[in-house]
Amino acid sequence: MDARNEMLSLIRSRRQGWSLEQPFYTDPDFFRLDMELIWYRDWLFVGHDCEVAKPGSFFTVQIGTYPVVVVRDREGKIRAFHNSCRHRGSRVCTTAKGTSARLVCPYHQWTYDLDGKLLFARQMADDFDPSAHSLKPVACESVAGYVFICLADEPADFQPFRTLMEPYFAPHKLSEAKVAYESTIIEKGNWKLVWENNRECYHCAGNHPELCKTFPEAPNVTGISGAESDPEMVAHWQKCEAAGLPARFRIDGAGQFRATRAPLLRDAVSYTMTGKPSVKRNLSDRVNADRIGTLMLYHYPATWNHVLIDHAVTFRVIPLGPEETAVTTKWLVNKDAVEGVDYDLQELIHVWTETNDQDRRIVEENAFGIRSPAYEPGPYSELHEGGVIQFMEWYAHFMEPRLSEGAKPRL
Ligand code: 3BY
Ligand code: FES
Ligand code: FE
Image (cartoon, rainbow, N blue to C red):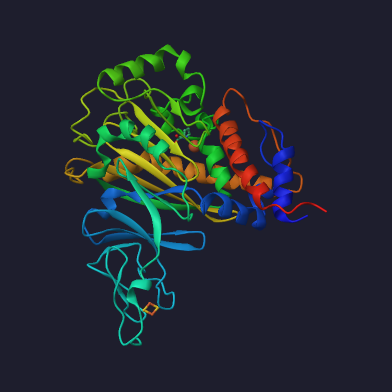
């Protein structure tokens, strides 16, 4: 049986509420199918508006085999292009980030405008048509300070996500923030293990001593059910909404994204060891309420986020191989906050730096055990791992129709 049919039959025969069979976490052909059917087709968070603050600022990102450059053009619009020169295919932008008035290919200096048009190509034939050799665009949308791209020729409708996310995030003015710090860690495990771990806090008490000082391990905070019947959550939502901050738990019909606010433990306002703010200036002057807790958003398959009163922590997941995933974390603060004056960088990043490293080890140990021939799928806790069950449902329902589109009938 080919990999496509094998994956389809394993998805159809899987036990709901149980982890997946081994090849979903290890097999190179299954990985290629994840890339083809999810990562090359859906919207992916890649970075922030504030990372391309001025015309000509760009950053690059690699999604599987696709190098992409995200750049702000002269009109202020954020655009994305395939980072592959229309001459002989060299990467045009070769650094992680930069600023340039034009995009100049280092190989033979073909020169592109910030809107992708080819401006100069030296000494080509008389009948050479520059207008037929613009950089190829990649679909790109920016919402409330977050830049998303989609590699598909016909991208899915971005509007439902924008409609849900924008009112929650706009008051925090992340498009005007700055990245105080970023880190990328490589986790030796499949990207789905990174998500499975993220979608539950069953592991928190045993693994995250720093985070547990402020972040509640209650299943209705991380998971997808129970918050509406929790008086503390409902009171928190009412308080935030009275201050103009949408707060209620909302999830998309297909389960691909959800936003909600939750209070932090005790009187904590920030992810520090004391719970006290780590930045003296608030992120946004549009937020005028105390103890707003954390605004949490995920969007499968590439991002989860926490926005607090004084900073935001954003996460980007990118698969590197069947058993390797890059997780990039960015700490955003008010653009006028000065390091060493308004915040101590080590204090700002301490809790999530430790938490990320703890989660990396968890994912790597999980991957280790799954490689065993003795591994078999195990049951999730319905109470604590409802979020993981939900992730798996999303994955299975996303993959199944796409796999069957291309599956060859079995002989
Ligand atoms: O970052 C998160 O949202 C998840 C929730 C629980 C564990 N992890 C911290
Ligand atoms: Fe880019 Fe030749 S490959 S200019
Ligand atoms: Fe964790």
